[in-house]
Image 1 (tube, rainbow, N blue to C red):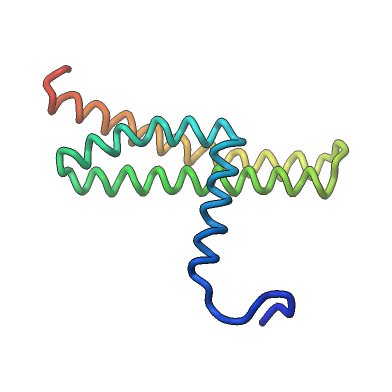
Image 2 (cartoon, rainbow, N blue to C red):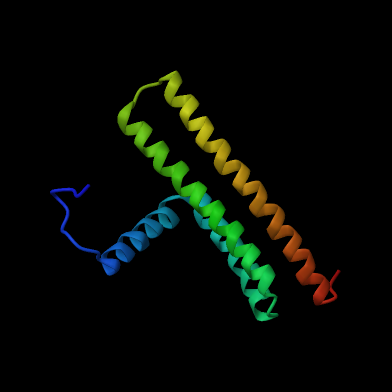
Length: 127
């Protein structure tokens, strides 16, 4: 169903700009997103450097899952605050469920990052 306010046609450059703008806002304004990206990049770079492609894929998948869930959680919290600025039990439950989803993805991400870091240090014979 076409929206009468949107221009017709597929605009990949415009979509990419929107994606990058959303990521920029998330990383700059949400510390929980920023520090996870900062922790992931060195491990991802190390596995890429040693050409461990399965490990790179696994870290990218975990990082993507974590970032997607964090972004959805942040967006849902902002939306809930706009819809109901006052205390509301249903809004609290909604935010708690979104936070639980983000928390589970963070646990998976952290476990993979720890496992891959230990493997990396074993390759360097530091452990």
